[in-house]
Image (cartoon, rainbow, N blue to C red; front, side):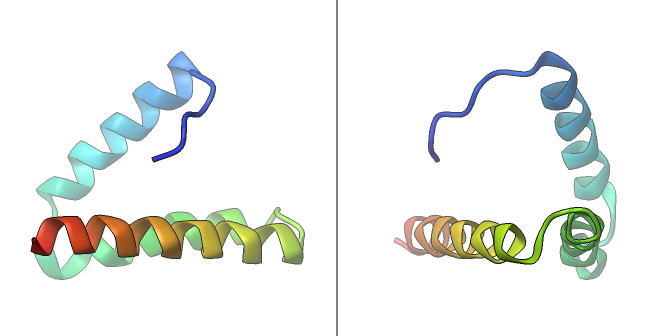
Length: 69
């Protein structure tokens, strides 16, 4: 993952969200992650949202390949 500036509040909130999503049934976990993306879509400009999805897609593909090896 690329290096991002550190934000204590955001990091703490996302760690909490990750823990809570991890407690949900496996069938719901992906839906909660997609919910976050849907929320972001409501305020990001269209091109920026598309770029975000592209970045996520590339990162997830790399993580998937690593997890399968």
